[in-house]
Image 1: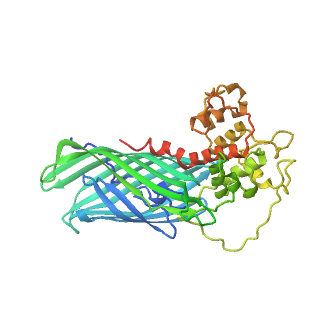
Image 2: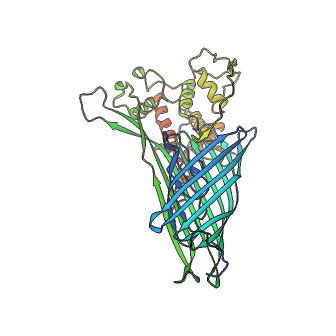
Length: 513
């Protein structure tokens, strides 16, 4: 390798991914910005298992240990501290790092938030490998992220740039500095957060320059690398059957959270001779790290739906009752009844749950008690007074932009929901209508012309992401009224998309050289 060539090296500053075992968080929130994978949030735990790979020595070196994160919400900014204690026993190596950050938050009238993160106060990092010490002497860092919240999900995209300069000391503590290593990092981060899952994908480019005096000679080397990272959190639902037959219920559903973090790198590093001098040859090296946390499970309530045994969508109905998405009296549920617009609003309101907050984030308490003032709610629709059974869920989905009225200030709560209308709500919930071509997308269905204009984009996207398919004759039948059994089936498909479908775009497109 030619002297002075820059190292695009995975991990003197490698980026990282993390998970949340119960609250569905991940990415930099649970591992910071310095290069590794974290076990993520877990109940009653503030210290996380952490791993990263470092290339500052010119070879892959895996460090493992713990990461402690402390964050404080200061209303318009967040103050955070990341403390790493890592080691590699086989190489007699340690890495200690403490970094303070400040994140400024700016929000616009559309609900989007821009975060800008930068260094705040002191930082320190020392890497020891045998008798050689790398001490961080200068650190430049900036990370900016745009968060775009949709009713069911938050999308975000960010860019990171950093540069670290280390002083090299060979010969143990107190030895004079022998040289410097400079590591530059550029990367992109894309991800989403929602109640039912989290995914983040990253592509990070690294550049490193090393210049060092060894004896009477000055040695310089560098190389390049690309790091791809993927982290996912899945909330999966499994049916657990009871083996004894003499029991009041045959089985029930289990909600289980699975966290997985994967890091893969490809780097081009120099060859070294027996004395440690860089040669002109370049060696391609690649590897990976994977961290999968212990799953957390929760048994769900068992509904009384014995009268539905053998019904074609029995499993879908049972699942939605177990999750509390269907709120009717289970023993009297009739799957052949048409689902009303108000009932569907209730289903969507229960399915779309708030995005969990960062559990590391501490919010200072109020200095004094503030008396809450109840605001009078003005009904949005003349046919849906506050006394109506579905007043709250209808108001909620209306204010989120998921369902509109039917004209003349009315919602028509008892009117039936159609397939086209239901698909429109699902796609609006995830904010993906813009994936359809404009102005009038043509779908694959033979009855494309029967799709209402307002639903055309949503139906186009719904077919692309696997929510609906043409029937045996190629039709959609968009204006059919949905029975409760049919609504249960398509709602479960949308739930499965939130759980596992959308994450494929963030995981499978990022990992796998």
